[in-house]
Image (cartoon, rainbow, N blue to C red; front, side, top):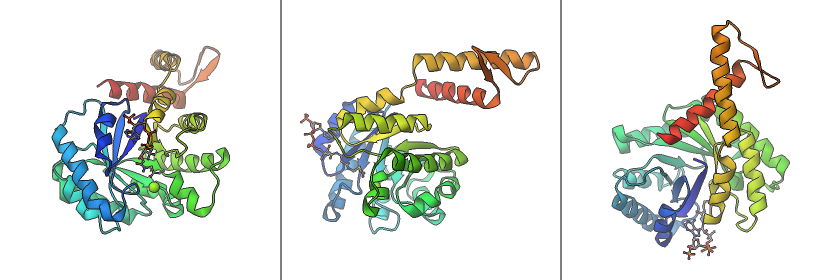
Length: 281
Ligand code: 1VU
Ligand code: MG
């Protein structure tokens, strides 16, 4: 999921374009891009569109961002989405494990055996402080989504590389503790391709799998930055092959192209190859 394109639920004229575009995932939004008076309309648009597509999204992951668990809209969002083929529900502003359990229970009630996985937004100071516990709170949680606009803007925190890195690193460690993936935040500066790309590169270096996009022109940038290079894949294959050989010889650490390789490096290589295999399935 290198790129996840947001599409406001009240802009159905964008749905078909987003569907046929290059984003790895689409996130139909019922939350902040939809004013309170139009929540019902947004739900109707999204449900009508998704039900009309059946499960024909192909390789694209289909996500819906609901309203937060403690809002009056959350229950109605889930009830409306119960019949749709959705890969993930993205739940915003999760702050503690009680909210995760409430979301997971509600999704099991509304969707039963077909319940989609949960992608949880960490976008408040309290959510960030509790992120590891949140990620571990229910087996339905598959990923965390960084929300920098909510995390920074109301508190007057500038979006400098140092501030962004601090938030990313904290979230990455929380996700790693739970063994779930993590996605980078949206970037509101549509015209600033360099800014988008430098945030995406920082995220990639920290092991994030992709980045939220709010405009189609950001999708190609995210797809490029988060795509593993041929060299990385070739190196991973060599590490795994050499590790198998070393194991036969009874060695845990060995030398490959002037570098020492042992268990953590082999784990990284295996993770990369497994991620590629999953993409190809
Ligand atoms: O060239 P065309 O006319 O065929 O298409 C336009 C436009 O319709 C299309 N487009 C999109 N298509 C699919 N998904 C999108 N999100 C999307 N955005 C635009 O691309 C062509 C060029 O569009 P544009 O440059 O004229 O864009 P507008 O001025 O119409 O719209 C800009 C905004 C930012 C309003 C629009 O891109 C948008 O609504 N984006 C998503 C906003 C959103 O969902 N926000 C909430 C999530 S982000 C968050 O919560 C934290 C920051
Ligand atoms: Mg937000």
